[in-house]
Amino acid sequence: QVQLVESGGGLVKPGGSLRLSCATSGFTFSDHYMSWIRQAPGKGLEWVSYISGSSGFTNYADSVKGRFTISRDNAENSLYLQMNSLRAEDTGVYYCATAGASGSRIGPWGQGTLVTVSS
Amino acid sequence: DIQMTQSPSSLSVSLGDRVTIACRASRNINNDLNWYQQKAGRAPKLLIYAASSLQSGVPSRFSGSGSGTDFTLTISSLQPEDLATYFCQQSYYKWTFGQGTKVEVK
Picture: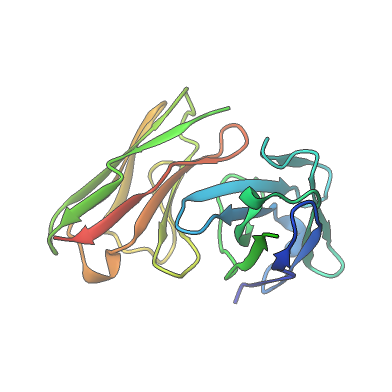
């Protein structure tokens, strides 16, 4: 079955960096758009970024553009999110999710990894 | 960017009730609208895609309708396992989520 397992979350100071990883199995990774979505404590869902199967196309929310970089390794069936210049408002659970061949719908999702930005 | 507005933000209902949640887009998104269910402490789960298509494995008491700017998620008869927060999401231009609707027991 489809599995997505995020890692790399933790506590980081404002201005710091963190790299999240998402290891996947159970589907043809290179055929799927992949995405990162986050959820601040007690709040709703916020899309962060997505990447096409071939890595030829990426898109970012305005709130992270220029600070975060999404990438993937199709040979390793893995997705990454490099997060730089972190701010307190970046705190939350970060979910990795598939988005199908066309990027039109999201799921399945991983269980999430918590990122806390605090001094 | 496209804004998504859900109403109501919370709902107190009885088991067996019909539940309707609305989602409005700030501009025309055709039928590029999905619905998700999130239970406490869990990752979201896709319920409805392309406004009205039921995701495989989702009970038939869930249905979606609408196109353009106005969309609706309906639960025909609320079951205990349906107590959760529901989010709409547009995929017409980038992605945007609604703020969520929490469904609780009265």
